Image (tube, rainbow, N blue to C red; front, side):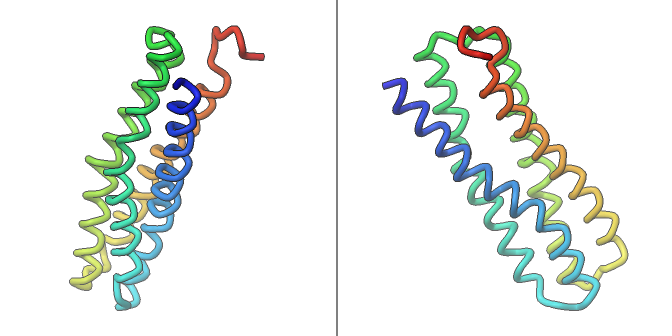
Length: 152
């Protein structure tokens, strides 16, 4: 059962967090260009839908991660607690800052309000970078597992 839970957890991490990271990273450029050039914001809207849709499915990642941790008896290990906290912070950044920021940029680009788009794009790029960095740290913690008898 542990191998099945771990497999689902890892697959969900790759197939869900990966597309969010890529779409969120691409979004600021597409939204800014749409607003500045008067182009359609359809590309930015698609990237936003990818982020929002995958964010909902992304709940599976910590659910299967916690289930796997419970099966392995490591829920109280510091590396897992830190990973859970970092995952919660990344989820909060996505839900409370990135997704609303994307919506605001789409609305601004559709209204032709190009003046604030560059600043909004820079802010969103920074938030997305922080989101991606948090996930990179979580991946390293999952692989290294400090204090584990299997870590090298």
